[in-house]
Structure formats: C-alpha cells, structure tokens
Image (cartoon, rainbow, N blue to C red; front, top):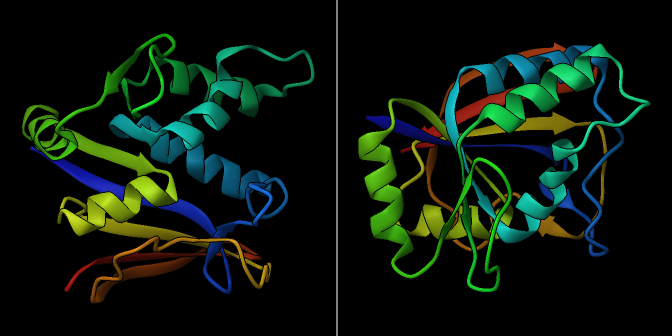
Length: 181
C-alpha cells in the first residue's frame, strides 16, 4: 500500500510561492538538490495539481545548460509515473495520466495499488487531499526566506500534526516531517 506524502519547499512564514505565482526562493543548494534527487529515486509515483504539473514539465526537455545533477533529476522525473488532477486539461505528457471526476476514489485506488511513496505536489491539491484525509505525511523543506503573503503550504484544511523527524539538509534548509495527529 502506498503512502501519500506532501513535500515542498516552504518559506519560514509558511508560503510555497508569492502572489505572482513564483515558486519561493532561489535554486536549492547542491546538497538540497541532491536530497530531492534521492527522495525522487525512492518514490513510486507523483500526483500533481495542474499548475504544479505545468511547472514540472520543464524537466521533459533537456537543456544544454544543465549539469549532471540536473540531468539525473530529469531522467528520474521522466521515468516516474505521474497522475495529474485537473478539470481543465484534456491531455498530459509522457508517463502521465489525467485524473478528473471522483478524485478521492481514484487517489485511494492509487494508494491501494502502488507500493511505496506517492508524492503530492501543489498547495491547492494538497489542501483537497488533506481535507479528504489522504495525506500520510507532510515534509516541509523550510528555506530562509520571508514572503509575507502568497500561497500557503497548508491551503484550506489545517490538520493537527505530530512531529516525526527533523534534520538539517544544508546550512540554510531544515527538513521537518509531520503526520496527522
């Protein structure tokens, strides 16, 4: 049975992007990016909201400017099964499946069929998944930025949580893992 984890970069004041839709913060350090690569390597799939999926489609096409780590991430991301929750998209890219209609039933089915970790990305989708009681863990990568406003990590439902673990990823990034209490 799969475990659904929401893991995203977050500012110290709790936002994942600003009102302009720009993802928080500058590029991660090499240590932090390596952490994301190793995290992705262990996942059985990813569930995206439409907007986050469109951002992540960047990894579908190689860029001449990429270093080895960026290429490694792209290869892993392309090979990862993806499901995209959207009522507006009519099609999705390679290795991706569109989810619409009864989202709860389809995600519960994925959790039952897929072994390992399923990541969920996108604050609005995460809010829905939280409301439906589908998220098993929340992984916050707290970065040293204060945005003051924008899209919060917890969009909508704000569940009571219990701390599972914490550790420093790099000199400026703290990883906090929580489970619903």
